[in-house]
Amino acid sequence: MSPDRVVKNVRLTVITDFVCVLAVCIGQHELLDAINYCKDTLDLPLQFEMEHIPFRLISPTLLPDDIQTKEDREAFLSKVLGKERFMALQSNVSKYAEEKDRPITLHGIMSPTTKAHRLVLKAGRLGGQKLQTPLISAIFAASMEEGKDIADSEVLADLASECGVLSREETTAFIDSDELKKEVEEMSAAARAKGITGVPIIIIDGKWAV
Image 1 (tube, rainbow, N blue to C red):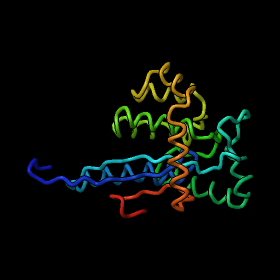
Image 2 (cartoon, rainbow, N blue to C red; image 1 turned 60 degrees about the vertical axis):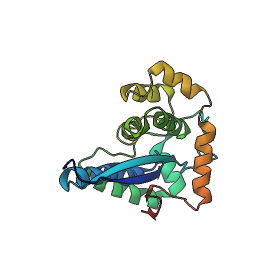
Image 3 (cartoon, rainbow, N blue to C red; image 1 turned 180 degrees about the vertical axis):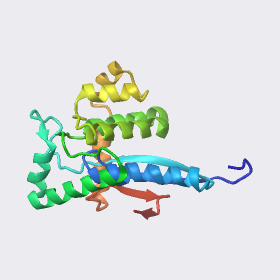
Image 4 (spheres, one colour; image 1 turned 120 degrees about the horizontal axis):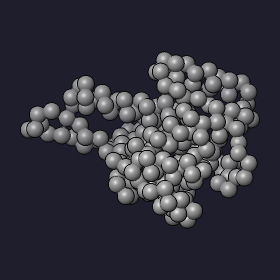
């Protein structure tokens, strides 16, 4: 890009939840691919600024933060969606994963996501999207590619440490506290109050939602 070109800032507000496989396919992989295509292939004079808005897709009454028994994701989704809708989802996910050569799976643990959202919000406050975006990708990968429990403090501590957000000890202390829990709950509730019931939602420059 020529140094004398005027660069336009594009603000992307991404409302998402880590339990949603569409959020992985569209809100993460496809969005980042599109950004890289605009910058690297088309060489457009654009600078993208991303803001992550947490959303609890699954009601805490169905998947509480303090759940004691691990929920198998496939069994949970089959129960909540019904067998026919779950099988259709499973087929679409398998097709997407094969077409894109990405190891996305519905196997694994169905985790409440408040802790993960809190950690992402913390990353944003510590280092903006430079810390936040890699952590979001790592959490999605842990959940939707490796089937890990992203409500587990040890799993989150590993991810935060690997992404340079916090040390393992700092992450564990943060997760064990209530820091940013209220903020996550309020942001999720505010999104619902605006009529949002599904994710991902990507808002461009505060004007256009896709």
